[in-house]
Length: 379
Ligand SMILES: C[S@@+](CC[C@H](N)C(=O)[O-])C[C@H]1O[C@@H](n2cnc3c(N)ncnc32)[C@H](O)[C@@H]1O
Image (cartoon, rainbow, N blue to C red):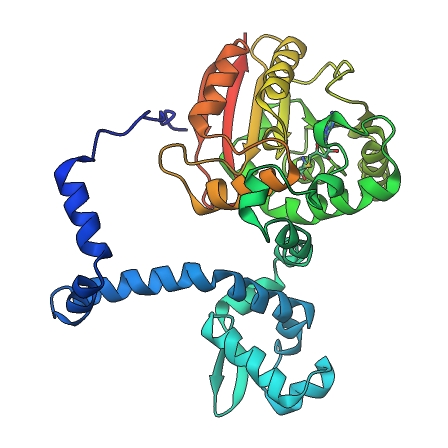
């Protein structure tokens, strides 16, 4: 547990003559050319230029990754290195197109090549053990279309795919959401939940609690993972009726019906189940606007017994130290959903304190780009 970092507000003024001089100098093509050749500045300039090039080309790298996954290359290279000619007939591409893809995959670190044979790199092999990542990559074409005109997206002028994919956006289709809307997003969440559950469990000791209520708990993957870890824990999943039905089926399939149940309802309009001493919001807050989150936190505080705890686990903004996953990826993802935003630890803490929670603590995770964890006590 660590003290919460505070967003430090506006950084000290860094304008002034030095900033103007430095910016003008770096922007000057003649200076750039000189700095790229001068031995003392050359390595620094090269690093900067490469980083800029990576940003320029990043969308192509993502599409290489997409083709790599879509054509199931990780599994095809899993047992032995293959040449492009050998792989081509299996994936329905010409040898030339296969080589083009594999060369690109080597360039971005997914493969290695030796004597014309391609093998998985460590990163390429890691994909096989991360089905959640593979499903996110497969889901990305919808997001990709939504960000095709990023300025229009930021202006709110795009009728986005993601606002329809996540059928509950804006409080729409809560009680009456149909199975065909609930199923795809619930399945995607369930398959990507393993990584979040592992990080959350390692960061926060679940086994000191008796009953866990997971609000917006999807198909129950998080509750199921926590029950496997804490044998005396009981669980309740609360989600929209169409999703809660899927959770009931999953808990039954996993033989957990005696220790866990799922209840359907909307946290916007319905009371939340009573009796839990730990309530979790896993990847829920960033889907919603501030007023919805604040009302939900107040509701949760009233539902908890004195001393009960609330746990929030989700990717977060870095505040005044923005992060790629929190601020770039989820900043734009939630823009495409047309609801919510990633919040920093300090913003979560402020919301929790405003809702009457105390003892607000951050629990560091090993992989904060997957999730960050914060807990608070109801008094
Ligand atoms: C991004 S998903 C996260 C699911 C799960 N917690 C996880 O991490 O895998 C958000 C969940 O909140 C649920 N949800 C959205 N609005 C809700 C509401 N008004 N009442 C109850 N659940 C809601 C959705 O159905 C969905 O399962």
